Length: 461
Image 1: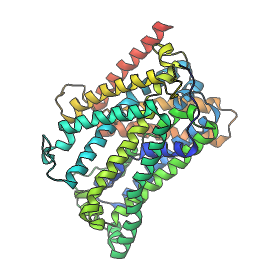
Image 2 (image 1 turned 45 degrees about the vertical axis):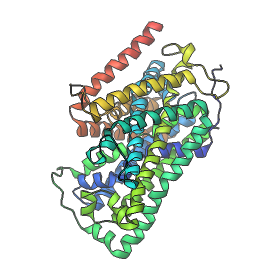
Image 3 (image 1 turned 60 degrees about the vertical axis):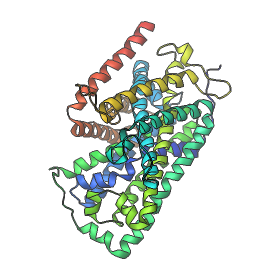
Image 4 (image 1 turned 30 degrees about the vertical axis):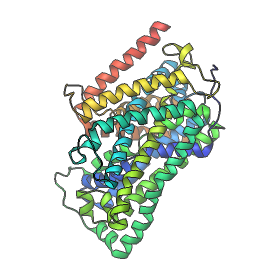
């Protein structure tokens, strides 16, 4: 066993990780959500995507500047440690290892299983499920749960046994998921312009019930969650070749790719179906209208692949969280979690912990969100609510960066971090606005988990 990770990922893999983690299943369905929030107003929906993208971009640029200055083991933990202090860096790493990464990883594995089954059922309607697909078998049936656990174990095994293969898988799935998005963008624009559908949708408002009094705000709230996840790419900065140069490039290039994909796909979808159809049925109707029923059903396969790519990217970061703490001599048993396998160059013990905690979060997600057998007070969305704390925890980092980065020019030191502060506050407000009282239950759990981490480190010291 060694205690050092090798630099094995190039710039293209880093870009694919940024793009692949952010662009998951949501992109295929956000057109419907955004239009519902805006009351069927297509131009307002486009504006919402632009505002959400701008918030992500200013936050991402600020952390990219930090990436050029600070580099150790785990980007986000490095930045927290360098700007606020070692104890704060530890708490950020503990949060990533126990809540943020595993919560999202478990949900994405479930989404991968769900859309795999939906593709199978669309191709073979007579495929036997214990709970028929029409009754939700693809969502919470035993086949879906078994496939979810298989995907979790398979993605973990790929990262544990061959990190380079995991990097190639991330690259491949990112390219594959962009195929239907790019195809809909180009064909949808051509089809919509030639048929007049696109022009009509830009001037026609659909009929939508219960539209918010602040439709643009609620629409941007929806895009906020679609743009989340880019910070996870910083978890492998110790394994990126020439990280101080390549990680910031990957973050910036990835951000522009994500914004462009979301925006042009949204417009392309508007060329394939009326705005009323998109509000009532969703983006899949545009695929069916343009490509026919068979190719439209294949969309589920691309969604499954997209989710698997995102799951892999999350697991890739998740398996390194405890290692990033142990490498600093922090957290429980640094001597155990700092070990790196000499053959695979993988922090195996850190990965085992990641799989265990991810499985625990999936159990909670299934009981409280899917099967809903857990109806007690502590019921919340474990995939979206961690956003409220990740952006809250950005605030001290951004403030301290402005105070300490005296070697940076005014744009890097004050302008971009100030915009990132405003964006982070907006994300927190958006989360509270969207989830209401569930935020309270989540914050209680968050506080308890963080207290455990604090007590572990205090006792060890």
